[in-house]
Amino acid sequence: MAIEIDEGLGADELQNYQVVFRAAAYEAARLRQLIDQHTTYVQFGANITTAEGTRPVHLEGFDTYVPGEPYEVTRWVSMRLTADEQEQLTLLADKAAELNRSRNAFLTYLKTEGTDKIVEGIANSRSLEQARLLAEESEAAAIELGADAERLRELVTKAKADVEKLVVALTAVGDKYRKGSGVYELTPAALLIETNKDLASVVDEMAGLIEALDSRARQFREEATRAVAESAGILRSLADRYEEAVRVIGDEAERWPKSLRRQIATALYGRAFDESAYALGEQVSKLSPNQMPDSTVLPLVTTGYREAGDSVLMAVRAGDATRTAPVVLERQQVTLYQVIPHTQRLVGLIFARTGQRYQAAPSYSYVWKGIFDTNRRRRSARYNQVWDPGIGVNVSVLDFDNDDSPEVGIGVTGTALRNWVQVGYGYNLQASEYFFFLGLQLGKGF
Image (cartoon, rainbow, N blue to C red; front, side):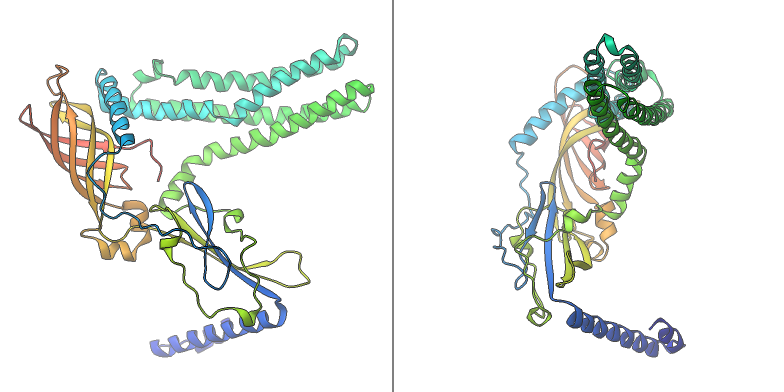
C-alpha cells in the first residue's frame, strides 16, 4: 500500500485525505481477515500502574474481574494539614535551623541535598553488598582449603584482595560526602567537578573488578579440574559466586552513569514500562474473533486510588493452537493527569531573601492549578508532565532578627516543574518587611 499511497498523493489536499483513509481501511480489513483466518482467540486487557504497584482493571466484555470500589480523586483539598504534614514541618524546622547556622543557607542546602544522595546511593549499593559478602566468603573458602592446599589458598586470598579494593573505594567515597567533611567548603562548581571525578573513579574501579572477578572465576574452575574432590567443590562454588557478582556489579556499573539521563527522560516523556507491566492475568477472557464486543468502557472511577502521573497500560494479544505463547498485536500507555481546576497542599523549605543572604524557613502552600490553563492541560501531555504550573498562597515561619522568636510570613507563590520550583513574594508580619523567596524540592522525583 505504500507505493499506492505515494502514487495517489497530489496537490489536492482533500484527495490526499481520501487516499490515506482508503489505505487505512484496506489495512484494517486485511488485519481483520488475518485474525479470522489464523487466530483461535484474542485477549484485550488493561492494568493500572501506581506508586503502590500494578493491578488489573476491569474492561466490560473482555474479562471477569470484579470492578473496584468507586474512588473519586479529590479536586479541592482542605487547607488543614494532616498529621504527617505537621510532622514533616517539625522536621523541616530543625533542618532550617541547621542550614541557617551556615554562612549561606541556600548553597549549603544545594550541597547537602546532593551529597546526601551520594551517601545514600553508596549505602544502598548492591555492588558494595556483593563485594563485602564475596570478601567474607573468599576468606572462609581459604580457611576450608587448609594448609594442605597452600597454592589454592594463596589464589583465593589474592582474589579476596581484589574484592576488598572495591569495598575500600566505595566506602571512601561514602565517607568523603558525609556531613562535616571537607567537600562542604567547596564552591558549587568545584563540588560538581569533584563528584563527577569520584563517580568516574568508582565506575572505573567496578569495571576493573569485573574483569578481575571474571578471570578469577575461570582460574577457580580450571584449578577445580585438578584438585581433590573436597577442594574442587569449594572452588566451583566460589566460581559461581564470582560470576554472580560479575553480573550484579556489571549491571550497577552500567546503571549509575545512565541514572541522570533516565531521570531527565522520565521527566520529559513519562515512565517506560517493561513487558511485565503489560502482562494479562488469568481472568482476561480468550475470545474468538466473532465473540469480541464492538466496544468497551474503562471507567476510571472503579480503578482505585490513583494520582497524577500514574498510567493505564493496555494490551491486545492473539493466539492459536500452534503457538505456545500468544502474540502481542498492540500496546498502549495512557498517563493520567488532573486537567480540570483543582488545588494542592505543599509542605517544604523556602529560602527567604533578607538583606544580602537567604534564610531557610519551613512553610506550607495552598496552590490552585488548572484555573487559567485548562485547555492547555487538555491538549498537551508534555505540559502536564513537565510544567504543571500553579499559583497560590504561602505561609512560612521566619526569624529575620535571629532572636529565636518565630515570625510569620504570608505571601503569594507560583510553582512549576511538578512543584520542584517555587517562587514568591511575601510579607513578614512581625518584622514589617517584604521579602522574595525561592523553594526547591531537590529530594523529589518527577
